[in-house]
Length: 433
Image 1 (cartoon, rainbow, N blue to C red):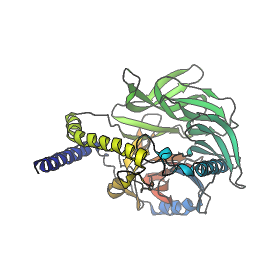
Image 2: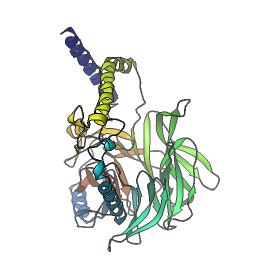
Image 3: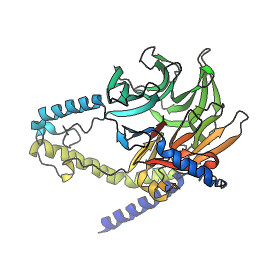
């Protein structure tokens, strides 16, 4: 009885400490923005223009496209379907192992042979003036550059290599050159350049950093802007933490790198330069990793339960090996859970909590807080906040901007007025045609 009371008290203390930690991690709130004057004429123009805009976006690793005045449809990749067919054949060949000792993994759970553990994700995309979409696909072992003809639905495999993990595509339509970020197995990301046909592949940056989101600068062919994050490692080379994201400029002629925006209090993400020379980016508060006394106290309180859990899985493994029966039904079929936590721009987001508490944009709930701001900075250094709750954005050739709050895509007008283009469950990246 005394042990039971002690366990209840420890659980209560762990809950209180955990809630206090979550409150501390919520970060600083976004500064209040002045209300922009509402222009009914401009709002009417935006509402009329939004339905006629062709856009594409990535949601949970899948490609989606909406033509002007059309409906959202998923772009089905024949390559992905080919891989899924191979997985299905693999499942059929190994079906006899189900519910036998051959199907027991080292953790004590039953191995799954249905292919659900292997995912082929789209990581970046760009519209090409040749009437197609260029995109990167990757899985655990392969990656490549593909194109999709919007009129015919024909897919072409342009570049395909083992251990190729590309993301953050940016295409210069005039030269046909692509900028991208290449991730290797050590957790380092460097900038690379290739052309739209997959040739002339070369690395542009090096070092123990995460160099991502590259972009071309108009009228500066040899200069590139990109987002860079430092990595803190221990003596064994294991990554322990990541620094704040800054915006850097690479001069490809000289190989020199110079900082453009760097503030320890903020992350500067996804730089883009418009035809007028203004720099656009997403700014959000930087959350430094913390390990305080409360963390140590929580670990101490939870240690007995973690030890019991490890002991249970150890015994469950032997039960499956020798009696083919688990100690619990939790080792049964894998169930699909609702979307709970997601990763957006390198941050873990509690989707359920965000949809309850974050701001709405044109009646659409946001997945990120208002402190994620879309900012425009002119040549004189004057900054203007264009929108809040911004996950991703893209600039059109006419200078207009579309952006996403994670659940919708919006056309942005002057004075921070916006109009809804479409809604979806999760919009991680968006591009305009």
